[in-house]
Image 1 (tube, rainbow, N blue to C red):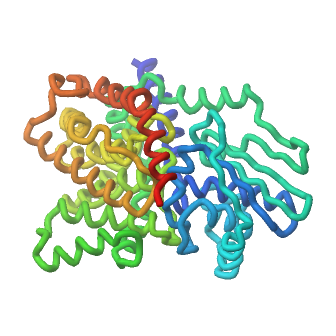
Image 2 (image 1 turned 180 degrees about the vertical axis):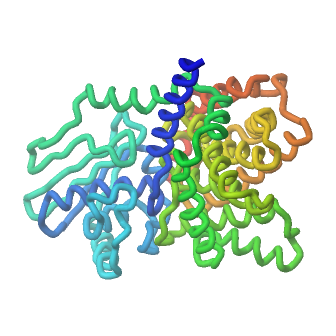
Image 3 (image 1 turned 90 degrees about the horizontal axis):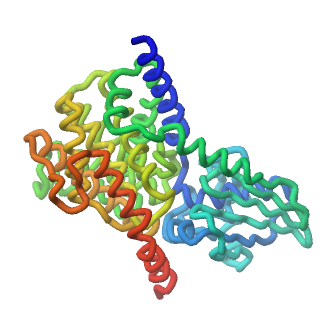
Length: 436
């Protein structure tokens, strides 16, 4: 018995490590922020005022960076992200690289973009996630490249000399570490972990509720994005929407996404490298916890179930793809909501299967204000999936890509994203680049 306990505890420690790596604060959409970070590091190493910037990004990063507002700038896109990163970014700030921007720095960056001194091109690289910034002063220049994760620097070049380059062995080691820590786990393992791990070991996840609730409150002001949360609140007051639990889930979750995509200068707690995924995995659980008057421990365990389940499902997907990963994050939230309403793994697993039967294949057409629409669609599907599961209703293994086993359903969703939607991803980018 002791040996079994030892193995279980070891697995729990690995899952805590994964959550701490994948659930971190970020200011702004993580794709343009990655380019801003590369530019900030390059500018710091240049040590002189940046006169010009040449940036290159992977096709997927281009797709996710074209239409999103960069925090503190009121401006969308990768051009401004590179410029403010070089001029005012914190090279040590990671995903919060832009947290200390000043209005003067923003104006200088906007002027640089307006004068055509910033270029952004698609890089021909094998990496799905890649950002490279070359900053120049006269004939002097520094290039910094980030790949595979939003903050992993893989190459630094100064005036034609490579001063740092990640070795192939390090690439492999990092990739193996990313996968091996949760390889082979199943949904039941995630559930047992969230329910059984000592509370003090996972109390840190409560910060997700604090950060994303603040972002939601900011979004309710109606100053950001498509103002969806604020509009729903007005419609609720007018009687066009009922003031029930579903409306509260939709309103407060989308408000956080409105603020995040609309450039609010507040951090989001991310999940799997995405602020919207972090919001979708957090806010529905927070709202349901308030509704059932859950105590702090129940909220923390539900949040951990949601975030770790979202990570487990997203692990079957590419880092960036044509499948909107807010849907998979909302599957984690469905598990968390289900547990708050009925503490039963079977209900949580049925809710996930229902969501896969309902929402598989929602496309990602780049990060933008409209992401809040996809957030609302996903969390609505999640709540609906939970309600049906509470009644013992689930999409069966006879339907579509859903299998009788929840883990096989999740695996099937991963195959769809990894293999079936590759050409779609290329077509989406072409449509976006050719828009007039």
